[in-house]
Image 1 (cartoon, helix red, strand yellow):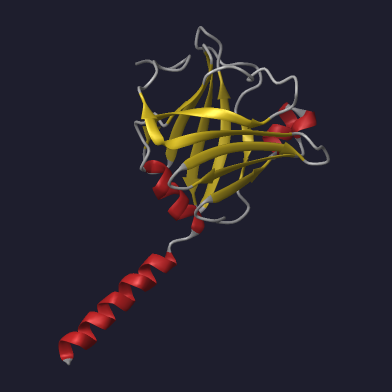
Image 2 (image 1 turned 180 degrees about the vertical axis):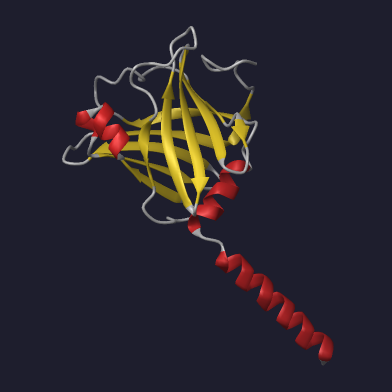
Length: 187
C-alpha cells in the first residue's frame, strides 16, 4: 500500500511540474527540438502580387541557445531574412534581421514585437513594438504570429484594419538538407 501511495504521489508531482510550464516555455522547448534542421514551406496565404509566389521557401533553425533562436528564411536565392526569437521573463520577442548580399544591415531591419503574455504552447503572437512603429510607420498595426505543432510551423502576418494576410507554412515531417549560411553569417 505504501508503494502505491508513493507512486501516486510521484506521478502527481510530475503532472504538477508539467502543468507549471507556461505556454511560452513549452513553445520554446518545442521549437528548440528543431535546431539544426531545415524545412521547405508553401505560401498558404498572400496578397495577389506577392514577391514570394512561385519561389522555393526554406526555413533553417540554424542557431539555438537558452535565450535566442535564429531561423534564416530563404525565398528562392534571397538569403536576406532571419527571424530572431528571444526568450526572456516568460515572453518571446520576434525580430526580423534583414541583410544585403555583402552582409551589411538593411536600413529596415530588426523590426517586430514581443508577446504580451505567455501565450500557448502552439501559438505565440507578436504585436508591433515601438521600434517597429518608429522604423516603419505603416507597420505600427502589424501583428505577427507563429504556430507550431508536431507537423507544421507557420509564420503569419496581418496588418490590422486590412484584409491582407501573409502565411507561409513549413512541413516539419520532412527534413531537407541545410542550405548555406544566410547573408551576413559565416559558415
